Amino acid sequence: MSITATLSRYDIIEWLMWNDWNGVYGDGDSIREFGVKMTREEGLEIMPRQIKENRVIEP
Image (cartoon, rainbow, N blue to C red; front, side):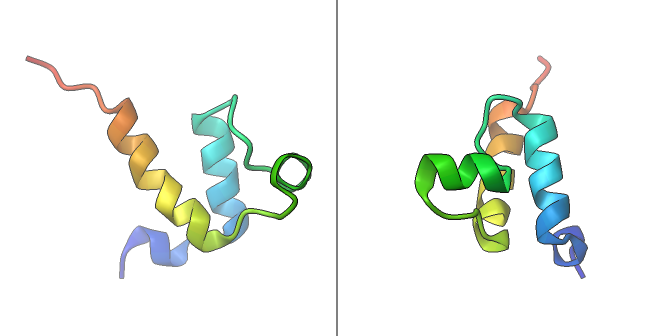
């Protein structure tokens, strides 16, 4: 079982908000910006992109 299988929608939103302070992930912000709440599945699609983009590769 992968770690993402155990994460709730709330856990995913919390991580995304921690990782990207300027992002729109919370329910209120998401509804104001896009008219809908972010789903768990959408959050799971965003997480790997953020991890990859923020990865530090040392020489």
